[in-house]
Length: 321
Ligand code: XMP
Image (cartoon, rainbow, N blue to C red; front, side, top):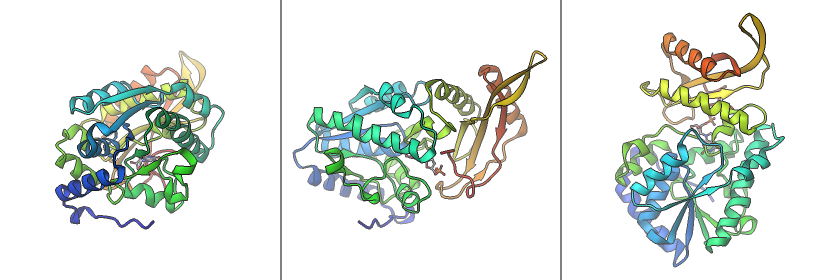
């Protein structure tokens, strides 16, 4: 299937919503559709759009994979239920961590997330709910990067030749696939969502796994989760496209109370970008970077080194995986 992009300049958000609602009603008929809400802009806008189109025939799940940021499950669920959309939280932490055990290769980690999400967790949920469709917020950029072979975005299936009906037992519907991020934000705004949702900085589907080099063990995810919280707090007022922390695998020498101590390294990234296709590191004030480094090493004792990425994309990418 060829997908034609709707560029932001040509997008009429109201018309887009009307058309998508009509086609969602038509495609799903009298059947139930399930939907995975991650809290990111794409999945939140998909949820709102589908809720408007098919109402109670939509069952929205928040999959708690143990890989999200601090307090994220609670806050995502409360925002969406506040907008009138019922959300069920599914505890799938054990399933994800046991599948990730021993996996260090970036593409393999992405594959494990895909399989656990679509096969193990959604295979089960679809069976239990009797749903025939899974709605998801894939956007044009996800398809482009996957098809170009840069990265396999976790949500790309049919474009890679995967027949979800025979592989997982349900059909996937992707109402936002012709849009890029700026277009999705405009649709979210037109749907009446709060700015905190439609303007949320991007966060990847495979969550903190994309920010851990090497094995995504629970304690390593916890370390990058703490660093992420510090970076997000300190950079909240900065006008940037996205900012994040990455946990490296190195055993770095540090000094603690006059003695050598091996520890971890955290890399901070902060990006200026329009659509994530190309990006430049933000020229952050040095004092702000020093403050982040001081907090990270004080609040996460396993970390002895903090760096700032100064390489643009390309050749870097926004996430580490
Ligand atoms: P990269 O790291 O490819 O990131 O330069 C580009 C943008 O995409 C986000 N990203 C993802 N989003 N699933 C997603 O939904 C993914 O697998 C994924 N990988 C990266 C990333 O946060 C950035 O905004």
